[in-house]
Amino acid sequence: MSFPEAATPPELRAQVVALQDEAWPDRDAPALPRTSLTHDPELNPVTMVLVDGDIDGEDGGGADGGTVLAALDILSKEIRHAGRLFAVGGLSTVVTRRAARGRGHGRLLVTAAHETMARQGLDLGLFTCDRPLRAFYESAGWHALPGAVIVGGTRAAAFPSDQPGFDKVTMADFFTTEGRRHASSFHHARLGLYPGGTDRLW
Ligand SMILES: CC(C)(COP(=O)(O)OP(=O)(O)OC[C@H]1O[C@@H](n2cnc3c(N)ncnc32)[C@H](O)[C@@H]1OP(=O)(O)O)[C@@H](O)C(=O)NCCC(=O)NCCS
Image (tube, rainbow, N blue to C red; front, side, top):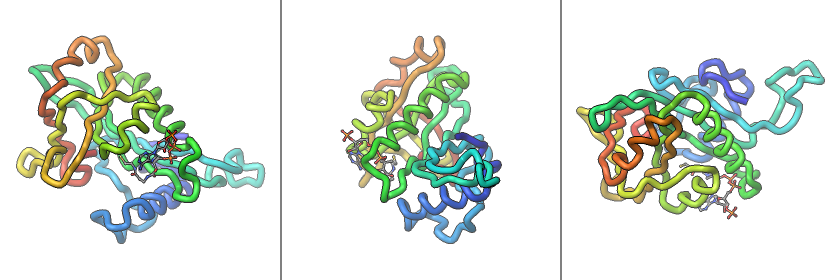
């Protein structure tokens, strides 16, 4: 299922935040109320969840009824690169419930996100991951972008993906004709994404 982050049913939203807290216990805002937003609304966050259980509401519970096995958010914005504007989406806060890892749930949801992003008119998807997760994302339809660095944060407080102590790989896929035509210009480039101070590298 997917929802604009702010319109996620409260019971699902509470589970998503709990999974994020479990995976990133020391993230910047650990005391977030269960239903407050994780992402900057300017980035049009869309939450995708893989839910197990009673989602049809046989007991009247509606969409609130299941267990969230995995969750992620798709963020998007326009960037200027090589003199052109590109509609870019990225994956953020990809997480599988700890007790349910290693069963393919993460791959299923990340693959679904890839398909959703390809359909939604974005020129490309673009995000970083820690190097050991490269094969995981590749198995879900994404490709490593050779030599590319994402410059996150803001123009005033840049947060590059190649900063000391980071070992990140830039992952991407090009969806539109325009995106594909210019794909090679994204190789070995420093890509000014600047998603802001909340989602510094998405
Ligand atoms: C990364 C994560 C979402 C994967 O979810 P999952 O449901 O366990 O993934 P899957 O079961 O679909 O696994 C797919 C493959 O990725 C591999 N994989 C998963 N996590 C991995 C890790 N941390 N390092 C290396 N490989 C990993 C699995 O071994 C599996 O490979 P295989 O099919 O060859 O056996 C999950 O481990 C998680 O929530 N981690 C904590 C949060 C996190 O790091 N998120 C990613 C932010 S970029």
